[in-house]
Image (cartoon, rainbow, N blue to C red; front, side):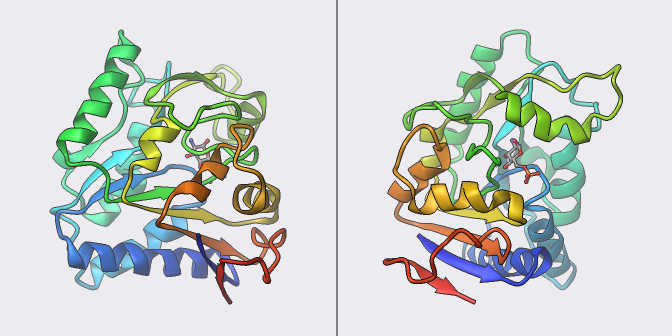
Length: 252
Ligand code: GLP
């Protein structure tokens, strides 16, 4: 794993955006994997700045990691809506090439299979952008998710429901408790992975993902097995890491 540490979330996002932009310049038909959540927002903002300066992402494709079950795609907090608002529009992606799992499909397991098929048909994901949950989840692969799990329906951990409740302040609209998520195995098939984490509340999950045992208790720890992962952290999220840890390119 390579690790890049920046002073704050904006600088972290800018550093990660440079990596994504370089990949897109090399391969205009790049297949991106895109995460929602607050962590990758500075990355998307910095990438949108580069698009305004001439970077062309209109030939790229994108697959979202996950979607809530039980939220209509029109709901502003559905990942369909979040991806459209925070990724597709600002990055100038072609809407027809952006996919989000069909969390509101009547047959969710069939939708999961179809999603895997769509990713395979696109030739797989070239560059996956990830965040990390405070409990070490990636996508919505909660603790206990096996390393070979595929896109499927999952129950959200109580910690995740609590973390996400900030997006659902209206008590008449309860926080979703299930999701359709790419599996750990699906995510690990991406050719390159970029994980963005910022803030002191992520320090423990980051330390366990990077330096803890590779174990389903911390799904992000399976990233240690992937040959091409870069973590973009701010100083607060990197606080639990030893700068002297072997085999890590730590840059300040
Ligand atoms: C959700 C998403 C994850 C994301 C995580 C962390 O659970 N499914 O993909 O990484 O939230 O979110 P945040 O970056 O807002 O802390």
